[in-house]
Each structure stands twice: as C-alpha cells, then as structure tokens.
Amino acid sequence: MTEQPRPSGVERFLNLFTEVRAGEAKTALLLALNVFLILMSYYMLKTVREALILSEGSAELKSYLSAGQVVVLAFAVPYYGRLVAAFPRMKLINVVTVFFLVCPVIFYFLAQMGVPLGMIFFVWIGIFNLMVVAQFWSFANDVYSKQEGERLLVIVGLGASLGAVAGSIAAERLIEPVGVLQLMLLGAGVLGLQLVLTNYIDRIERGRRPAAPKKAAASRASNNAFAMVFQTRYLLLMALMLMLGNWINTTGEYILGSIVKDNAVAAIAAGTAPGLTEGQVIGNFYARYFSMVNGVGLLLQLFVVSRIVKYAGVAWAVMVLPALSFGAYNVILFIPFLSAVLTAKVVENSTDYSLNNTVRNMLFLPCTYEQKFAAKQAIDSFFVRMGDVLSAVLVFVGTTMLTLPARGFAAVNVALALAMLLIAWRVGRHYTKLTATSPAPAAAA
Image 1 (cartoon, rainbow, N blue to C red):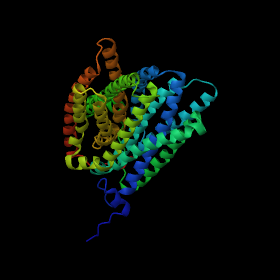
Image 2: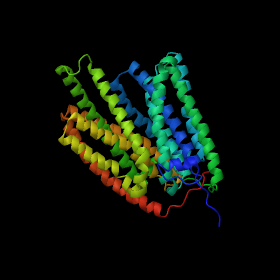
Image 3: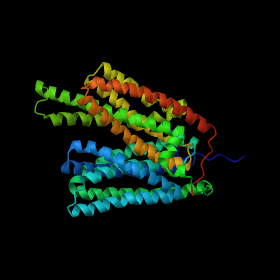
Image 4: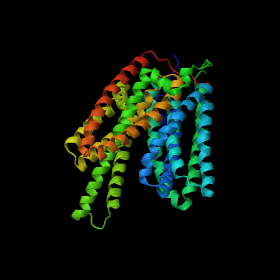
C-alpha cells in the first residue's frame, strides 16, 4: 500500500484558514503572490490617477468619466473575446498584460512632453483594473478544478486583500521622494514582475496536469463575449447579479457620503469639532471607515470565508452579501443615523471584499475556457461598471427631480437587494447543477 504524502509545515499552517492538502501550498501561495503584485501595482497607479485627475480636472469630472469607461469597454470586451478565441492561455495573458505594462511607460514620456493625461489615464486605469484582475482570476479558475478551487481560492483571495493594502502604503511612502510620474513607472515594473510569475506558475502546472487537446475553431458566438453572456442563462444571471451588487454598493457610498457631510457641517456649527475644517472632519471619518472595512475584511478572509464555503457551499455563500445588503439598507431606512449607516456599510463592504469577491470567482470554476476568459471579462468589466452608471443615474434623478433624502435612496437599495438575492439563489442552483457533472480541467494549451 502506497503511503500518502504528508503535508508540509507550511501546509499545516495554512490549514488554519482553509483545507490545504499535501503538495498544494506551492501553487496556492504563488497565485496569492501573483494577485498581490497585481493589486499592489493597481493601487500605486491609482494614486497617480487621483493626482492627475484632480490637478487637471475636478471631482465631478471623475463621475462623468465612469460613463466613458463603459463606452470603451463596449468596444474592448468583444475584441478581447476574439483574442481568447485566437490565442492559447499564456499567449493571451502575455499579450494583454504587456499592452497594459507598456502604456504607463508611454504615458510617462507624454507627460514629460507636457501632454495633459488626467482624463485618458483615468479611463485607462479603470479598464486596466477590471480587465487585468478579471484575467488573473480566469487564469486561477483554469488552473484549479472545482474541488480544488473551492478550498484554495480562499488563499488566493488573501493575496488580493494584502496587495491592496501594500500598494496603498507603498504609494503613500514613495510619492513624495520619487514623484507622481516616477510612481507610474514603478507600478508598471511591479506588473512586469507578476507577469514573470504567471508564466512560472503556468510551467509548473503543465507538469502537474496533462495538456488539454487542441480546441476546434471557435464559433462566432464564442468570439463575441457579450453574445456568450446573453445566450447562456448562468452567465447572464451572474452578470445581472454583479451589476445589481455594484449599483447597490455605489448608491450606498453616496448615502454614506451625504450623511457624513451633513454631520460634519453640523459638528462644526455646534462647536464639537474645534479647530477642524469640514474636509478634516470628513477625512478623519473616512480614514476610520476604510481601516474598519479593511480590518474586518481581512479577518473574514482569514477565518470565515473558507468555513462558509466548506459547510454551506458556494450556492449558499453567494447569497450572503445580498442578504446582508437587504438587512443593512433596512437598518438605514429606519435608523438613518451616522453610527447605524457606518456599521451597515462596514458589514456590507468587508463582506463584499472578502467572501463575495472569493465566491464570485469560484462561480466560474465549472465554465469552459472561453467562458472563463471572454465572458468573465464582459461580466467583471462592462456589467460591473454599468452598475456605477445606473447608480449615477439614480442619484441624478433622485437629487434633481425627486429630491429624495438618504432614506429614499436606502428604500431603493432595499428593493434592489431583494432582486439581487433572488438572482443569487438562481445562480447558486445553476452552479450546483453544473458542478454535479463538471470534470476537472486539463492544462490549457
């Protein structure tokens, strides 16, 4: 009888957070490091974005440019779908990542020539964030089988959480000594490191799995990422669920912001914020808010996410966020005080960044190669960004035509959260059916 390999010390340690079997730690940790570098690069470049757009434009301009991102994605996503049909996995990843890596270098030299970059860089980084991150999760889904992914993507998600924190800290400490434009080049360099790591992970995984047979020529439907989404009920339900989720969250941020501003003005008028400006009061609140969200989210990712997935299953885990959102906005509807709104938003956002982010990527485990790469791009970029646009429309109509108070927007979010919960239930049922007969993936060519 062959003796089963024993877990290493690292694997035994990782079992504190999720189930890791012998031989699985290396790839899981490398994938976590991979997405860590992607998020670190993004948050460094995001700091550059804020410096450029606010120095050349205004905060209002940022809202308008979100609609511009949707227009660009409407053209970029179908083109990406054609690349998926034409290229094998690593050639696709290399081509797309090199494109996004070269862009900051070009922007740097354009800035040296005095070309204003605020608007174009804002749109570009919005596309970069959505497409490169979605592509990474497509890669991770293609590496793991359904059984492996439900256990090990928890560790990968931890890398994303830590990368966002590391990128923010690095940007804060480097922007003064190196400068805004030089930080752009550093972000590109970090992205280059993760591309080298991606190719290494692909090589070691090819040795672990047999190669997949060559794909036949893709059909016209599989070339078109949007057609793939609209023609596959499971994918369409996922797209609607994520669009609603982003719509709810973005509107929730508006509710929080409006209440925070009102409280800051009231505190200064009442003399309870001595010596502080309105901006300082608001800034102090958001520093505390972001710290609470990141702290709670990290704890959830470490100790809660894997256990919910293990004992409740993905089909139930996908319903947790909409259920919490439904409860959170009911609280805001009936108790529209800052402390209640703060608690509700911390619960919602920390769950979104941990459990929901991990589970939404697990949903693609039973999908085909084209669905994991092309359709996921359409869902994670275009449909998610459409949630921002719908929220902007709601806020515009609610403030200029209906004069809705914060409670009115909360009531709309209650209805949207209920709709999202019903769609999440349908998504979970489809996932259960697909994974009942889904084979383990072979390495992509």
